[in-house]
Every structure is written in C-alpha cells, then in structure tokens.
Length: 443
Image 1 (spheres, rainbow, N blue to C red):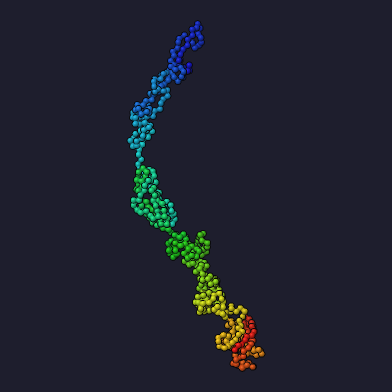
Image 2 (image 1 turned 120 degrees about the horizontal axis):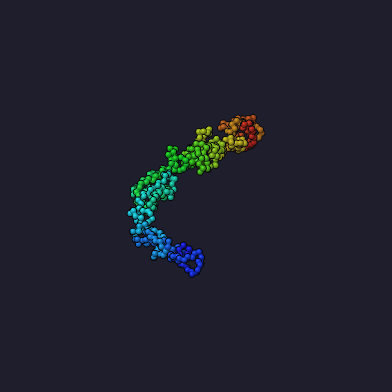
C-alpha cells in the first residue's frame, strides 16, 4: 500500500479462472511491518546515540537494520556526535576550557594557553622649540597589547615644568609658557589591565627657541646685533629687526624694507619718528611739532638761524649767524629784525625824531636800512633847503639827529628847529628804488 516494494497484506479470490496477471495460486509472504509508511520496511536502519560518560552529549552512534523500531531512543535519523571524549564527563562542548593543561575540554579542537605578558611601549613625539608648543599638546603616549594602561608612576626623574602625566601614562603640555628648554630623562612604571608591569626609560626634550620674538632673526643673531630678542621691533620704527637686517618683508607690518637699515636706530630708514631729526636742526620731530616748525626744513622762518638755534639758544657752527638767546623759529624777524626777509617792501621809515637823549627817537630811524647798505639819504626843510645828506646811511657815524650838515641858510652843527622836514631815500634792492616823505622834528 505504501509502495516501498514490501507487502503488508494479501487478498484471495476463489475462482475457476485467474482474476488477473498479479494473482497466484501460492500466497505471497507479507514482511512490511508498517505498510502505511514508505520509510518503514525490512531495510530500515535504526540509529541510537551512545553517551557513555552520561554528560548529555553523544560520543558515538549504534545502528541496526530491521522493519520495526528496536526500542526507546532509536530513530531513523543518525544523531550528531559532539562529545570528543565520551569516557570523561568533564569533557564536552559545554565545558570550560582550562588553559595550559593540553586538554581540549570544550571540544572546539583547540588547546588554550595563557599568553605571556607583553611589555608596554612608549612613543615620544619629536622635540620642538619651546615657543612652538601649546596647551594640550601631546608629548608622549604609551600602548600595551595586553590592554589599557590603568596606572603609571614616575619612579626616577622629575616631571618637567609645564607638563602633566595622566593616569594612562600620557604626557601632555599643561602650561606652555612654563616650558624650559632641555632634556628630561624619566623612569616610568606602567601597569596594564591584566596586571602586567613594564618599567622603561624615556627622554622628553624641549629645544631652545631660536627666534623668540618671531622677527626673522635668531636669538643668537640678535645677541650679536644688540637687538632685543623679546621685541620684534627693537627701535620701534615700524619695521621688524629682521626686515631691517635681511631686507625681507614681513606681512605683519604696514611698512616694507627697501634696503638694509639699522635695527637700533629708530630714525633709520624712516625719519618720521618722534625722536628723529631729519633736517638736522637740533630739534626732534616731537619738538618741531610742538613748535609748529617744519620737520624737513632746518630754518622754518628762513631767518638764517636753524630752528634748533632759535629754540635752544645754542649756536650752530654750520650757520653764518650766531645766536645768543632764544627766539621765535616761525618769525623771520626774530632775532634779526633787519633781515632782508623782514622788509619785502623796502626799509621802514619812522617819521618821528626827538633828539632829547631819552633813548626814544633820538635819531631818524630807518628800520632795515642795514639790509640795504647801499643807499643815499637827503633831508630838506620846508623851503627846500638840504639840511642833511649821507651815503650808506645807517651806521652810528651816519645818523640824522636833527643837526644841520651846513647849507646856505643853516650853519653846520647848528640844531635844526622843530618842525616838518622832508626826506628822499634811495636804496639798492637789486635795482635802485626810492622812498620819500616827511618826518617831524620835535624838541
């Protein structure tokens, strides 16, 4: 009935003739014990797992071939063998592996051994100049294949100033401004999470800053030059020391170098600083600005004295005039009221004359006449009589004091009477010029 080729039962018919080709006069044997299941027949193989050590895992399999099940525990499917040693209940797939005993307790095919401690290894970063470090910069790290470092101690040597060591053994810059150039040798003991201990020696190095102020010159060069290694612009002229010496522009400054200049001279190459004296007149730019004089003109009022001579009252051998007191550097007529620059319109006539010995108008004063030394003066009374005549008027021997020079009606040496007189002054100012007018003689 199940088509497995084995008979489970027979059927008989009483008949004179055969009912068909499958019928026989001999009753066939029935040997299928379960004609409803094709898998069950006399050729069926029955399997059973063997667990000799009773640990719940099969160590081997037995089998038998027959139609009916041999009993409890048998199956037509072969069970998997998982116990690698069915003689020892402590050895099975669920067992805990014990290292270093050459026994495969958990049947995974591998023997377990305890690893030897692997030493920790420090990595020290390349040294830099102290001014190149910043807070939180890493100086050295440590690694261990056995696991994380859980403890680190310095057993020899001193931790450098400005540096911190973490619990994990890492060295970090904590205060960059406190770093001191030099080499620091340290012995460090580290412990990994498996308890492995490593002792090793490292050296932390900090290089001396070669250019402390970043002006392009090394500290050694600045020491030779006499410049300040802590100040990029030692003379305060707007160019760094490096720009002045190397003639290499620094984009951090407004000005740029065009030639070598003195890094210790605030007036080289520029002459605009407060302490400079570009016109060489003895006054600094700061002093000239306070005076209102021209920093590029040594004689701002063009009176023949330098601004420094006038302000300080000290003679400058480079000028023909000699000063004996201070004067106004912006007044061309101070201290020399007779300077030609004071008399652009010619000499100034003082029309009063009172020769009474009081020191005021005792003679006919012509201001600036010394500037026009080549001159002639004629004085006339109201009747047109010349009472005074002089060539190169102006020195003490040629001053009109109201005394007659002797003409037709007035005797020489005689005092002239009070009244109005008339003058004619001729002077040379490139060409001959004339001034005329009246003056009043008072007695």
